[in-house]
Image (tube, rainbow, N blue to C red; front, side, top):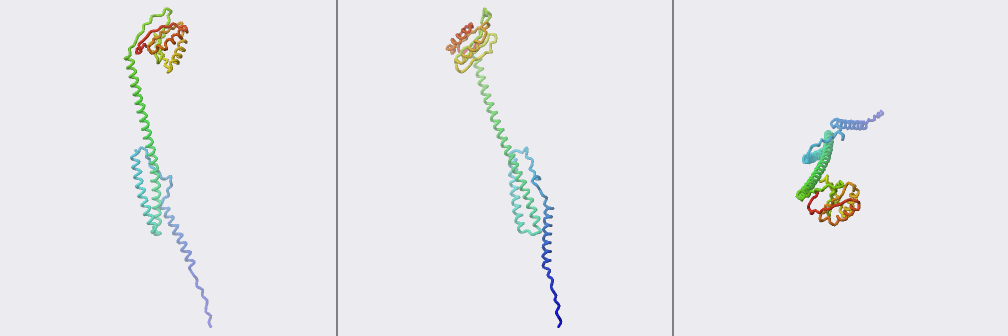
Length: 266
């Protein structure tokens, strides 16, 4: 009998599997390279916000509304691209992903612009509040100044309408110069004959303190050169005797005369 020859069959399954895997990897690498070529990389530093200086508050508000509308439109585009991505073939997938990344970058840019505009709006509002506060303060100061001017005008009118008295004082035998002393219940005024119109006032709230201030000043004068003439108004009668006694004890010559309350001696 003839012996049958043994023939073994060679399987190509393992080789085909390896080739399919290599082809898939190559295809994947090609897609990545294509995406890098079609989608330029952008960093945060490349996204610049516009210069908003000089815009008014209504203009900034309009710009914010416009940006919100653009953001809503971009969101709709992203949703549409996501739906396309779910049904896209491997050929269209790279393009859809690139569009999604581009829209995301645009959204980030618009959010930054909105944030910048809101900060400018806050600065503008603060500047307006500060300007209004300064304006209010200025108006208050003007009103107070007007009141002070009216008060001063009234006082000047009273002074102008008040009767004045002039004194002709004979020369003292010893060549002494007089201090003229106006005495009322509210103040003590002193003037020299040669400097009429320039008066020294003692106007402490307390009558005893006012008298003490005047006596302290008067006793410091030179009795060899000065003497005192008291011009007493009705309201000053209660205090004038105390003043005259203190001045006389200090060695000064004194005289007195009486004036109506409304008269202004100097």
